[in-house]
Length: 473
Image (cartoon, rainbow, N blue to C red; front, side, top):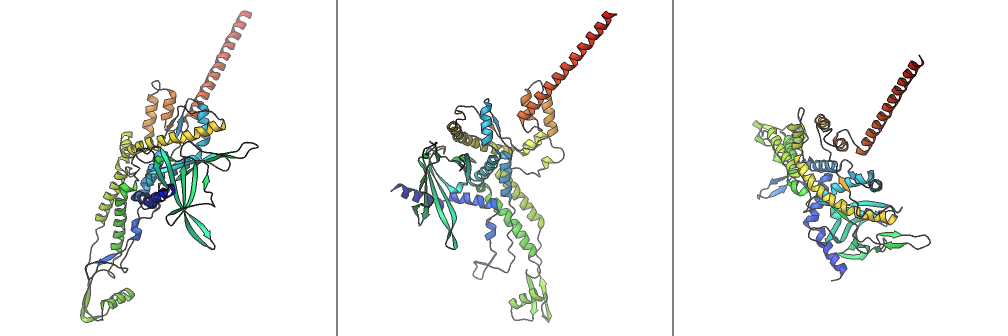
């Protein structure tokens, strides 16, 4: 078996694997494409088998609690910019230009990918201007080949995606494949279970080019595969696998409730007595069209009332939503613990599940940043911006958590003289930038000292004048 045959066989198996299906489903459910949209109304036919009917209400309602959980967990962990702590200020200044607002937005996308697919991928590359940039790839686009059982080192990876191209006057989808190897990227078209070299896009390309004055550009490659995995958990299990059945149950309940509410006297169970007509179809037609039917003198039409208990649906929905939140390890913003004036203990209790899940996710993200920083440090070194290979850097994720501000400020005030000013400022709820706030405090302190010195100088001058006047007398 050749290398291309090996990759072809792997792609064919992976495309239809359950793992990739779960990753695709997670993305579809986040976008609102749920299974309920394909549901059909069925009845028991004459032969006892289910058959599809189209004359009954078939509502397909979606209450997307899954998307709410994904957004909740994403914004909780990476909704706020993270903080860089390092003794070398030149390093944090250089990183500040890389970790700009565009990067924070990209990190949010990667976090969504990690939740929907079990892991998200970040690809460092050089753009047309020669600047280090980043792209994100969803989990269902990447087939990784790991060198270890813990999935921390990549041997190589395949990116599979579809692209729309014009063929004459018609659009058609082409399946593209990019294989990331140690010596660069190899591009193919996947057609009829075969890999065909993509001549138009370029069959092979190095990861980056270096052009020196007066010389031809030279291609270079990283010593690592430039794909950084941001995992949701060690097992790379998507969030949808935990809650899909619960989300489907919620959709089914609200859809069935509306179906039952719409089944009024014109399309529910009717009891006929001495009907003056040929068949039931004619009866249904007359009832639907005119709202009336003709019966014999001693005939009549009665309805069997099937009462719909809305409280039953409400109770089941509450149970399903509560179970979904617990299995997703999120929190209910309408929790009773937030009523009135909640103390910090009540707030922390409500956030306990999402906080535990975020702890595990942050551990995976910290390891991913360690890998990402290797590429950034290599870029700094190549550009002559400094060698930061062994620099100690701490990345602090500032979680977006509800707090009792009054209680937090009181605790900060009580900590004066026990903790350093910097630590207290870091914990104060009104502070958004610790360095800026500390600079303001230093400025105020310097101004106060200058003012005190001016007062002291003026006081001494006044005393001298009094002394001089006394001696003259």
